[in-house]
Length: 380
Image (cartoon, rainbow, N blue to C red; front, side, top):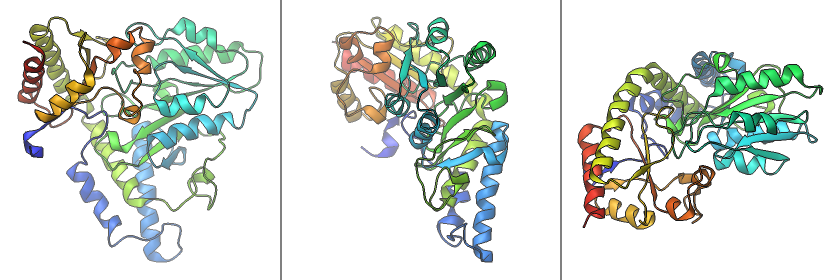
């Protein structure tokens, strides 16, 4: 089966590079290949492009260019946020939600960590979050939109909660808010002041830009311990020769995503409603996981009780439907999703769950084909 015959329903894992992004990157993959730290004129052109990309990204975040740190993707940015804060305040603790991406959970668990519960729809339990924050808490990290079930978290409410905690705490230890916005970037507001965040992770590979490219917003005045030492690039937080082509591509992808996000959100919400309605009509026992109200417009995550999701994924692949059982970053562990378990889903039902995530090329025909194929595989 050729690529043109297949239906790609795994945009939460990876997106194709937008043609405009490829065009923007091309000069820095070939003729303008120079190290931006070098002193001759040709290198200064590369540095100028790098700084222009930083300015473009800062614009969409409502931030200063110096507050944007380029990284090799979202995982590195999450690690820099968690370790960067916690290694400076070794006596402090970090609070995360139970549904964070593994690249937040695993670094956090290397420190004194508390995990706040979520409700059955995947939204954070604000009362439990408040209980978990104490005078030793240095960092709170809550994912903006979940990569598996698509649930969107109330970041502004969390920011207000943290502001209240800051105002009443006895300790002089800082209390910072980080959010992993990798899945949110295509569809949600990223303005850091409106959100009230101190650190925010972005991932180019999720927004039709190059993979292994991303960034961390670090509010002015916040000091982090670097993960990578060396030449002192990226304000000393990420040493190594900068990937100019990737940064340029990232900036172009972010511009396109944020400029079109409202129109694309409306289009995908229509397809999402069709997807869920048709699933429930043809497969009455299907359970839709995550919030129905606070949800990314491209995400349909379902449980098919009594079914084996690994077998279904193979059958769907053979039929030309490319989907997922959960996060691509932890797909090879063979364990039930920690996200679904946090929602109270049993191990058996977690192993009977599938994730379908749509994108820019998804249309009504693709949605109907996906549902029809799934129904044919499951119905006698």
